[in-house]
Length: 132
Image 1 (spheres, one colour):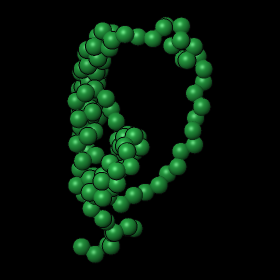
Image 2: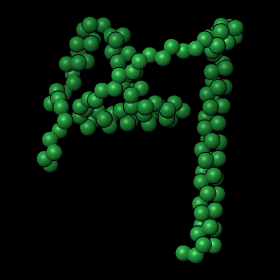
Image 3: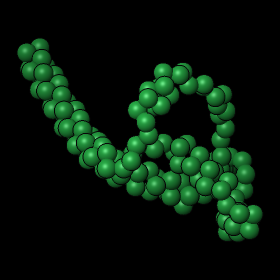
Image 4: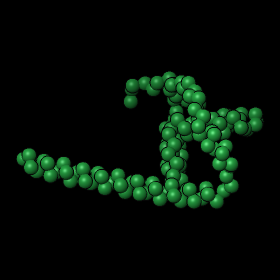
């Protein structure tokens, strides 16, 4: 490829990428605008309290990294929940989906918690074997 055609190909690629980014931002702005309009119809707190909360630095909690064994159906369920959140203009990570589930489990009664845990299929812990 000649230097001139490489330069024009790169330039057109950059233009296309810029256009794609602009389109994504426009879509995000429209989703955010509609969410803001919905939220503005709800009653709000006092503005002074919100500004005081924003000025105070947030205490960063220590995070712990771990790994888990999940059946493929549960992994697909996490992906489905993430897609549902995206449809609602909320970007949720896999970790956030799992953490939200933990908070919901915490709010259950003892009987409901035992029923939810009992309904899960048991999986072998540890890494799967390399044999296929």
